[in-house]
Length: 240
Ligand code: NAP
Image 1 (spheres, rainbow, N blue to C red):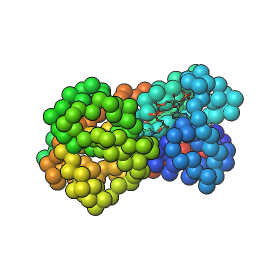
Image 2 (image 1 turned 120 degrees about the vertical axis):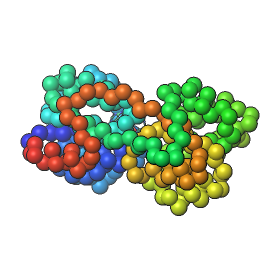
Image 3 (image 1 turned 135 degrees about the vertical axis):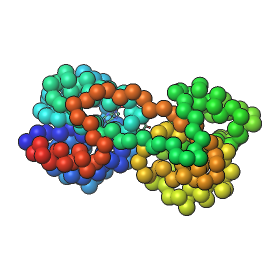
Image 4 (image 1 turned 120 degrees about the horizontal axis):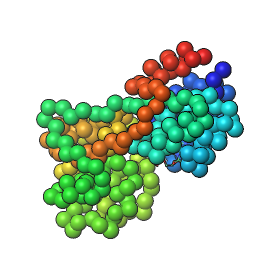
C-alpha cells in the first residue's frame, strides 16, 4: 500500500483526510484547528523547508505526496513539488478552480499589497477578506478610510479598523446583513474559489460594489492535478 502524506489546512484537505486510514499522514501548518477525530495520523508544524520535507518523506516511507493546501499557500506547494522530486515519489495536487467574474462584476486585479492600496485609494470603507496581512498595515490606514478586516486571527482592535475574527462558511443572508450594517464601498479578496466564501461576491454584485482581487500566485507543476476532491479520491482509490 502506498503511504500518503497529505498537506492540508483547507476544508477540501480535511474532506480527503477523513477518507484516509491509519497508515497515512495528514499534515497541518498549525495555524488553525487541529482535528482530533481522524483515522489517519495528524502531524502539525513545518518540516523545515524542502530538504526537511524530503527527509520526512524518506524517513516515514511516504510513497505519494498530495498537496491540498490553499491556492495562495505558494511556499508549501513549491516545497512539496521539490521535496517529492528529491525523494523520488510522485506529487499530486488539488488545484481548486478560481472564481470567474460574472456579468455586472467590476473586478480589479492586483498583484501585491502596493497595487492593492493604489486600487483602494478612492474608497472609504473597504472589507478585507484575505487573511491577516492587513493587520500588519493598521498604522498606514488613510485618514479618509475605515477598514473592516475579516480573518482568523483575534486582535485587540484599532481606532480606524474593525477586526472580525470569524471563520467561514458565510451565508448569503449573513453577508447581506454585514454589508448593510457596515456600508462597505469595496470588497478586497483572494480568488480562493469554492462555495464557502463566495457569498460576499454575490452581495457585491447585487449592490454594484467593486471587488479588488489579489491574483493567484504561480504554483509548481506536479505529476497529477485534480479539480475536485471527488476526482482525487477516485484516483487514490484506483492506486490502492
Ligand atoms: P505558505 O506560506 O505556503 O507556507 C509557509 C510555511 O508553513 C511552509 O514553508 C511550511 O513550513 C509551513 N506549512 C504550510 N502548510 C503546511 C502544512 N500543511 N503542513 C506542514 N507545514 C506547512 O503557507 P501559508 O499561506 O502561511 O498558509 C499556511 C497554511 O494555512 C497552509 O497549510 C494553507 O493550506 C492554510 N491556509 C492558507 C490560506 C492562505 O490564504 N494562504 C488560506 C486558508 C488556509 P516549512 O518550510 O518549515 O515546512
